[in-house]
Length: 190
Image 1: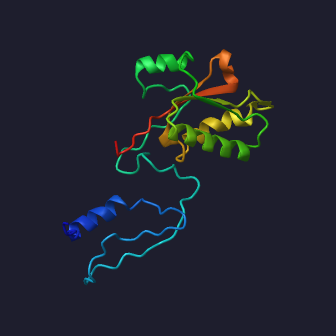
Image 2: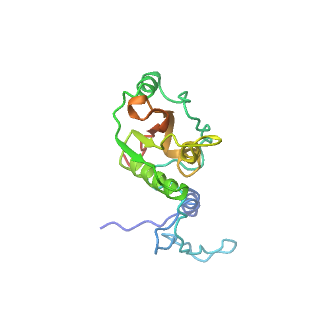
Image 3: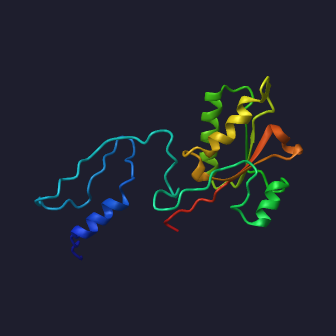
């Protein structure tokens, strides 16, 4: 049986840097796996118990810090995807892997439902989903949900999971629906 080697100060420092954005699971604490012997000048790590705020993207591969910020998400902008995919996406030729109908929901209900739906779609590896907002009308023009959904998809909580958004073809709801191209999950343990 081999002995477990001790972790160097440099390795501990690198570990802390790598894990600085990590959040503990509810009811768990963050602890240094191999705490250093009490040394002068280095404070002891403090264990915390905190659950991530509900607006954070889920764990498991969503890129965090260290990468350039993502371009703003604009409905119809397909510059960040290859031409063949962009053409199929625009023409509504991609298989729709999931759909959500937000008709009749309040803004709060719709926002929560959309957020959960996109997170599940990303987690399950779905690629193209349909979000039905309804055309909705009010004196100012477009309906509230129709205006809000693109903004919600562009928010920091969902943007890392969304590659592109485009109005749907008439057969899928036209102006009352949006195609959402969900990013592929990039797990680091492949």
